[in-house]
Structures are given as structure tokens and as C-alpha cells.
Amino acid sequence: MPAQTDDLGLGEPRVSSLEQASPPYWNRSLYRFKLQPDYDKEEITRILKEALEATFAELPVFKAQLVPMNDGEQQGKYDLVPGGNGELFVKDLRSTSLDHDQLRVKGFPLSTFDDRTFWGTPALPSPGDKITVFSLHANFIQGGLLLGLSMWHLVMDGIALATAL
Image (tube, rainbow, N blue to C red; front, side):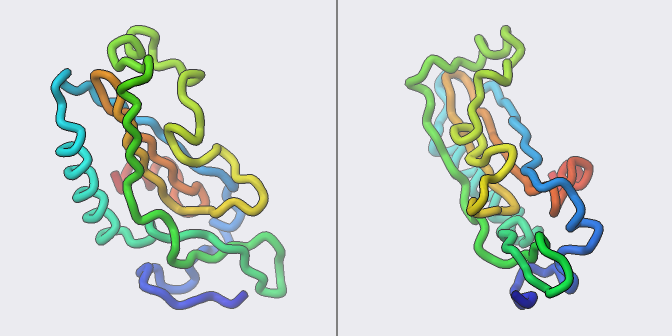
């Protein structure tokens, strides 16, 4: 499949040879925020959506997806095209047993957080999975917000992600 033109603002080549060799997984983070007991979920969601739209305007690659590319030279190469996640995913988990203060006391054990609920992506894709560059999940729990962020490592490693954030 030849490279496609789009409005991702990346220029050519979109995925360099060095990036093609990067590990094929999502670099995931979970940011935790303590909130007042009477927090307004809708207001926080509105603010997050506005911030995300501003981020997409500044970094349009965040709205891309990776698709297999056959350039006749090497199998397993990818190209970036439009069609990734362009939205904030919101989950209201306040009716569950998840409580920010209790999780903090326990040190926020990773075993508490499953892939699909908190990030929307597994660590590694399965064959046929849509590979989105970026995914953001706002998980509202009792007394807080857990913001799950997934970034495809081939596009942005931890240092680049920290710079972008």
C-alpha cells in the first residue's frame, strides 16, 4: 500500500526506518487525581475534552492510526493515516468499590487496573487490532479521577510523550 496523503502534518516519510524498528506496543500511563467529594464529573469532562481538542490541533498525529504497508522491500512496515481515536473516552466507575483514598493507601497496585477498562488498549495488540496512535480514558472513581493514556511506542516514546504533555 503506498503512502497516503493526509492532514497529519507529518511530512514524508511519516514513519522512519528507525521508528519501524521500535517495539510494537502501547506506552501506557495512568495519572491519578484526587478530587473533592462533590466534584462535578460533567464539568471535568468538558475541561478535558477542550484540552484534548487543543492537543489534537497542536499534534494532529495523535488522531492517526497505523496501517500495514507493503513497499515491496520489507514486511511488517507501517504507515500513519487518519482514523485514530479523536475523542475522550469517559467511564463512570463511582458505583464500584474503587476509592481514590483506599487505592492511595495501598500504593495504587497495578493488579487493580485492567487493560480495557482503564486504557482501552492492551499492552500489545492482537492480530487484526486497530492500532491507534493515542487513546485517552477518563475513569471517574469515588474521590478521584484515573486518566489512562495510551501512546503507540513506534510514534512516541516516553521522553517524547513527557515533552508533549
